[in-house]
Length: 293
Image (cartoon, rainbow, N blue to C red; front, top):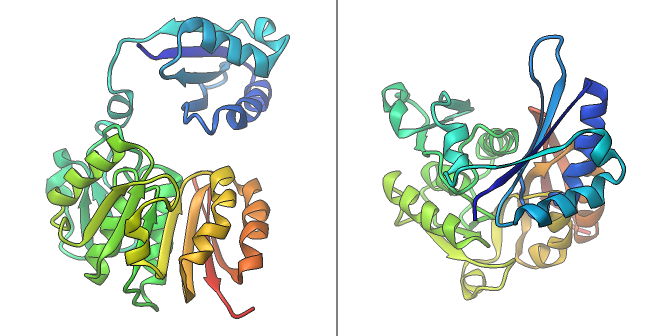
């Protein structure tokens, strides 16, 4: 089934208002939503990309969110060719530097640095090329954490392409468990681990939350990175806390600035306190540490 793009134009304030309304309605589905200026001084566009939905269902779901505004905004729906839209949108992006880490595509191997760690990730069907503000925020936070800590048991929860797990393995040379709910992401991450020479250090499994025997053998974790979104991160707090070492560090992202209080409230009862916030391209990354209660 081909993807369907919904699009409408409005002034900046209206476009941003409706983008904020639409985003939480589809965040659990992972449908990409973008809001941008079409030209200097011109109208703004809001675009939503629907996967695995027919045209009628996509329109019905968007109407349910927008109500009467759907017709007022003159929303247009278009069937798009069946292509790897993640790769199309990210192909050709420049390498991304985040502390000691440089994330680059195979077409940019000439830009590898002679210091730190170069991580090769091509745009694919798995999230995480380093260009997204939440991924870069996690890498920057990890760079800082690893200057003062030497974790031996690490977890990349919701690993996507595997970039965060690879950064951990390259720096510490200790084993890392990586998991993702999406089998396509797991397959992609395993291939990326081979390309980056860390297949022997990173164990990548398909798992929904902590429902996999690999967690029992790898826990308790000294360091956990979870670049997901606010709702599942809050729901995972009890299970995640049960798998942590007494003085563990958490790096959490995939968050909007307004999500910070909700996440801190979810993790505080388990002895996890905020030690650092990072903002990158509109995304929030939180660094938490476990303290004695």
